[in-house]
Structures are given as C-alpha cells and as structure tokens.
Image (tube, rainbow, N blue to C red):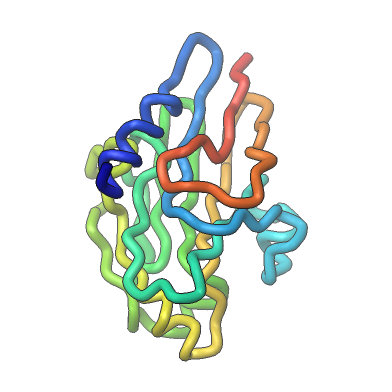
Length: 171
C-alpha cells in the first residue's frame, strides 16, 4: 500500500461525527508535546493548544498536508504557515521553529487564502534538510487557535500522516 493510500485510510478516522471534530497529523514523525516545543510561544500555549511533529532525521522535502477539511484563511508571505477555518475550529499549521528567518527559502505554498481544502490535501512543501542545515528545527506545529470545545491530543509518541492528532469535543 502506497503512502497516500495509507493516508486516505487513516483519514477516514478523522471525520467530524456528531459533537466531535478530529484533525489528522499533517505528516509522519515523532510527536513533540506542547510543553517540549523549542519555542516559548508554542510551548506556553500563547497561540493556543498545540502539538508538534518532528519529521525523520533523513527527511528532505516534506509535503505538509491539511489536517482537516476547511478554508484557508491566511498564508505567511514566507510560505511556512497556513491558517485554516474548519467549522467552529480554527487551526494554524506552522512548519519549523523560527523559520520565518529563512525568508521563504526551503518553503513552497500549495494553497492560497480563500481556497477550500480537504483533509490530506497539500498545504505547503518544506525542505526539512535545508531547515536543519540553516540551524532551525523542522518541527511542524499544529495549533488550535480557536474552538468552543475541549481538545484532546493523541498520546502516541510516533504518528503517521492521516492518523488522528487531536479531537475536539464540541458543546
């Protein structure tokens, strides 16, 4: 079974059902809990509850996929971050730590604001090897910036793209 077939299979588990909304991991790798993220804005939850995924050490170009169905609300000029509105939940997908300093080198957006996306659709491409070579962390952080519900993140240490990263219990 190919990479995208595995992703599509796992995505079936991340559909919204009743009063629950689930979001998928946007790539495979090691889960980094919020408090262990190497950036205080994320580690302290200033932007909202979050978790990171560190791509494998030997990763080159990584396709960062949409964690949920939604609408692109914003894209960073440097191509390293995408905001999504997913019903009542808003999500920020941020590729790398302090990668804004790379001024777009190593990043390529696949979407634009206003575009409707589906779970598993590419949002951006990050060259993890280039990010590491520049001295930055390639951890991809998924932040829940706004939701009326209670958030529960996966307790796994390793995750595959498409598997459930977090669930929101909506009121």
